[in-house]
Image (cartoon, rainbow, N blue to C red; front, side, top):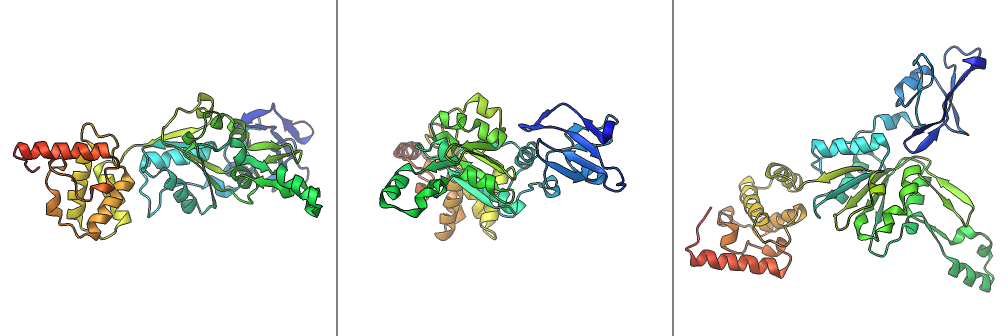
Length: 360
């Protein structure tokens, strides 16, 4: 370590360039180290603090000292374990924590109604972090997530002699990404139903989500994230996403829950519900889902709505014991959402009556 400094080649870590250097401060025995994280940031750190940080680059040839991206000690303990109001399996919590550790967006796919959007809210609640929600539509453009410049309003104000026209910032509307980047603490950013947008939408966000920065031409400024947000991206699989975008994400598919897990979900939403009603209702629910020829299978959220209606109408569990194909399910409008599926069950019920019917 010549002249109290050890330098190494720049390293790529999590999409950022790290310029690792360790400086030994002469005369300091307790906290002798300064670490250069990037071209401008130099932070003091004791060897104990360094040991607690996430190891990414060995700085000393002996391997005794390591450095990491500048993050708080709280980030190291940031683990999602689920919440009392959200049943999260082991695979899901592992995926969330892996994305947090890698500091990459978590891309969550699954059938509609399987809790993808709610997952982001529960992560924010569990980790006690603010949440920003960007709901994507078919007309949404990536630029809207960064900022929008209202040139028309500025032109109008200039014609009216408004004083605020001299500050261009008055005409820049910040998007959700900008809000997340300038937040004074880590936030959870939900980009909901990204597959609704044009195919170029995810491509237009590659660098912004990777480097966590973008350039504002009107202000001639680069907007950088003060704290790298936890980004949750949901997709209903309506269209394929580009490979370049997928490469930058951690992926998890939420499979439709098995009966025992769905029972837990029902208990979370409706504590104290009669278990015999839940058992009979879920048995018929899975029969409906597994009916051949069904155009749209009912989702988890629709199962919860249906069971809520059964409870509200005080339905006798015994009346649910007939096979789902023997008659239209009670309150079937909560489960069957198009006329083709309703006609399918009407035909199956007619055939069952013609053949004598039967119970399970």
